[in-house]
Length: 213
Ligand SMILES: C[S@@+](CC[C@H](N)C(=O)[O-])C[C@H]1O[C@@H](n2cnc3c(N)ncnc32)[C@H](O)[C@@H]1O
Image 1 (tube, helix red, strand yellow):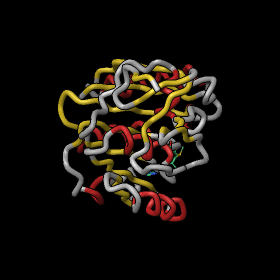
Image 2 (cartoon, helix red, strand yellow):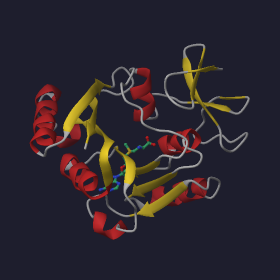
Image 3 (cartoon, protein in one colour):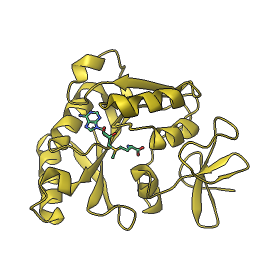
Image 4 (cartoon, helix red, strand yellow):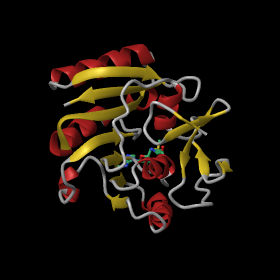
């Protein structure tokens, strides 16, 4: 395995991997080679961002992250490998999926699952200021939710990542128009956009925006 420019992310034969914090663990059917877990870009938007050469990857061994839309923990499991001494506060709204995520978190000390809506950050006000916010939720008001959380929890000069699925904002409008609207909303809130990447061919009509607070 070769090191990459992305901290604790490795590459071999054109594929990216993280070194598993839990030796031998398989989280979502990914290939595991000598405790290196393949980061499958079709299953993880952050993984897709890496394949698309995303510019800023602030995750280090002790990074504290607020992750919105944890689902069963596919991407969180890779962040857990990347930041072994950090904490990932991971918010998920669906109880059914959340309990699957809790099982994963029992195997990894740096995952902190929170059953809540990301639209009500006051419900998890115990979360400290964080080094990074990552959001992957398919909600109509996903930009407002992201801004609310960055306002409340993101440290100054730190990075937020917003994955936008244009169809969940408005299925009738072309993705290009939706992404322009998103940009305007982020900028008018005072955040600087430092990167944006379409996630095709791994995800259709998705774009990842990176902001700095
Ligand atoms: C596309 S999936 C996330 C996949 C996950 N990020 C990964 O890569 O492993 C979107 C998730 O967001 C959750 N979600 C939707 N609205 C939410 C909200 N308001 N607050 C928290 N989670 C929400 C959904 O239940 C779903 O599990």
